[in-house]
Image 1 (spheres, rainbow, N blue to C red):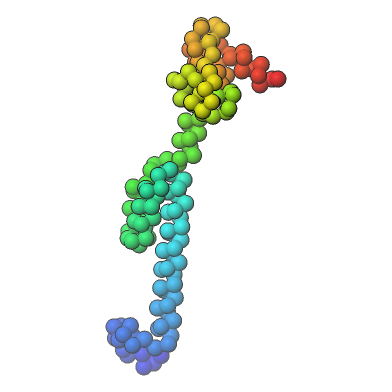
Image 2 (cartoon, rainbow, N blue to C red):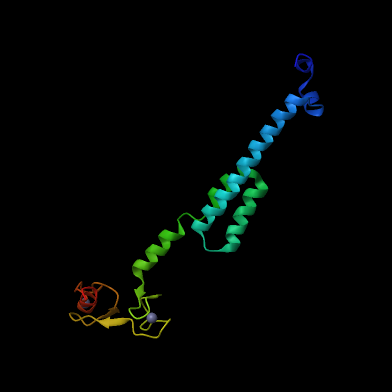
Length: 153
Ligand SMILES: [Zn+2]
Ligand SMILES: [Zn+2]
């Protein structure tokens, strides 16, 4: 190593001896490792945030082309703010679940779009129709007697 210390930095990279070649290989290995981890993480994270395969594809391409240093901050800035799972949970809280087939329906529909079964009942107190899967009437708060009887059966 005494001879190589006299060489300029560019000379080391142009004519690397054995030990500098190892260091360069290790650095490249680390960069490649970080790169692959970033791509794997982006694949998982974008899948948890969006249902669109096309969007996921572009996020992965972004990180792959721009490298983790530029690609990752860009991805974090552009990705959807919330997880898909949480949005689906939120949706399920407001959906009318068909008591016949168990599918989720738009609460404004009167019949299940999957099996044709009626999904609305009339409140016994205020006579407003609401989804049969709701535990309480959204208009007056009266308990859904039919649903309670079904659950306790
Ligand atoms: Zn149904
Ligand atoms: Zn009511």
